[in-house]
Image (tube, rainbow, N blue to C red):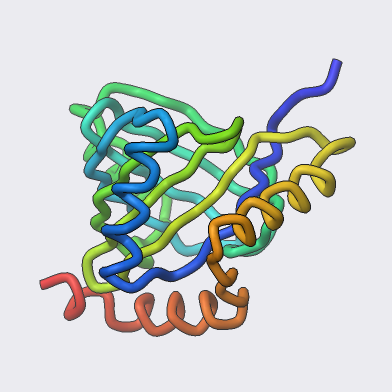
Length: 179
């Protein structure tokens, strides 16, 4: 039995006009799943370890590989959002430091068997992301499928290097960018 625990995703920065266009487009052509407000804290260390609270629950999650990789294994534990600050305290007491905080409004759609998220992150910008959960055997095929869908939407995929540069800038300046 194959386990779909590999997140396959591609993303692109959007202008404010594109953001509004794609919100309208997916409301008409996809299935609106939810709008969510998320606060996500990334911790320092060797692993990509995060906690998040949103409108529905909180979670701890760990992603393998490097940030902005197109394919990453993901482990996630959900819990009551009221316990978010207990989770933060636990990691701080274990010696982790909060490396970065994100404040994001996320719109989620299902479209042609893809999860589409259209985000605005305070101090960071507008992003569209196409995602499929996959398994080891199908992850490359699913990645090509997502790339074809991005082309179909006439969106140029933002290069990983550009995401990395903007992420590194945000990481250094997030406190002033999110005031």
